[in-house]
Length: 270
Figure 1 (cartoon, rainbow, N blue to C red):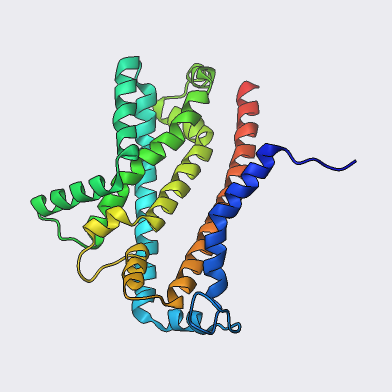
Figure 2: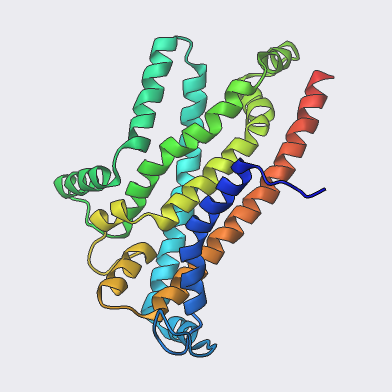
């Protein structure tokens, strides 16, 4: 029998082709010795060589990674605390209000957020540069972490905490021995989402970046305005592959933590 493809499968295939075709087109021409985005001449590593020979660009890459790691780590801590605080709120009206305030920051246009931070930093006297970019990235990453952690808290059975209290656990032990182990997958998800958002953010970073400091997204935009160069393709290819590695790493980590979480749940029920 001939295998029939469902319309939904064909639709998804078309969507993925539309999404990924421009990326693979960009990656393909990053190896073009002709220096243009058409008429592929022959395979070369020339543009990658130019990329790694550019000391200034390597410093920008390092700045981007440091900003992403720091903002993701700090926002994960703040966001996890915020999610637990929201979860502990008993009044539905207050909880919905807090969640609405959190979601507003997620759905607000990046241009509005960036302009607001620019005005704020200028008003309070924070010099635009590393500090301003880090604070802005932390601010827009915290709501993402809250959204990723809160569902894990909501699916946790209240009987786990009740059992811990019956066994004599105090609030600190309940937090460290019951709540945090259970929501670890959500914490990892929030960290990786914050890391990814920080790496590819442009609009907010563009507003709060000062002279002498830049990130990859802003630098790629500046390079593109000066003309088409396949060094941009090489840089974008490396950034895309790095993001893919992050997704793969998150997949294996979440798979492992989910397995540990199931073991933890079985142990608690016993």
